Length: 265
Ligand code: 0L1
Ligand code: MG
Image 1 (cartoon, rainbow, N blue to C red):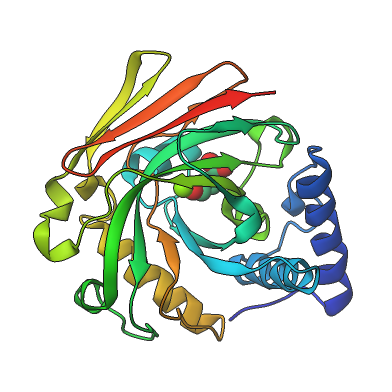
Image 2 (spheres, rainbow, N blue to C red):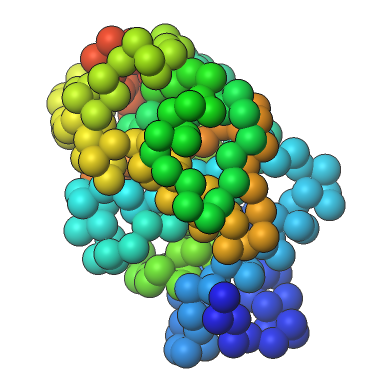
């Protein structure tokens, strides 16, 4: 870990990100004030942010891998995946209306979610370890929201902003991984009846379980592990699609059913 920021700077940045997330206002990327900030500094802010939410009674229910497909990396101009934490307050039920109130510039991503049955820890966690520890997988839509003005950001700032985590919806048909050829599963994303993106799950690091293994190894570097019963988003399979009130989004997963969300004010 190469943490260069002192404790006071980490606290200040954590309060700034928390304010932007909870009040829904955009802020300049953190590297404008701290140009030498490292990705590990970003994770130090993210860990402090997690501690603040948990102290307020939010429950940690899992983690998200982000920037795990070429489409997302190209879209965002980065070449390294990231992770973020997920809490109970971010979950929304499938098929219901999801309010975008308090979100700055929401976008949707279709992802494969994993639910674990055994603890996983790094270093050296592999995709095979992940598959052996997985209870089931299910389709999910992640609603991300970057808090940085004008979408100007960099990986250091995105990591501090918890990987743009905002809301997520799981649904479709949960399946055992042994019954699936996960990388070949096709996914189609539709908005308002128009097909906007499609890809196979292999777009996520060749196999979504690779993204979960990567996440577990980053967790190890942060002094954490992944407990049994965790919900893990493995990363957007296609590029992210902007949404606004009135939009209907449906993600169809071959053999896993579909997840839909209607966005409202
Ligand atoms: O879920 C993700 O892929 C994280 C994306 C971070 C950048 C963005 O806001 O799109
Ligand atoms: Mg995502």
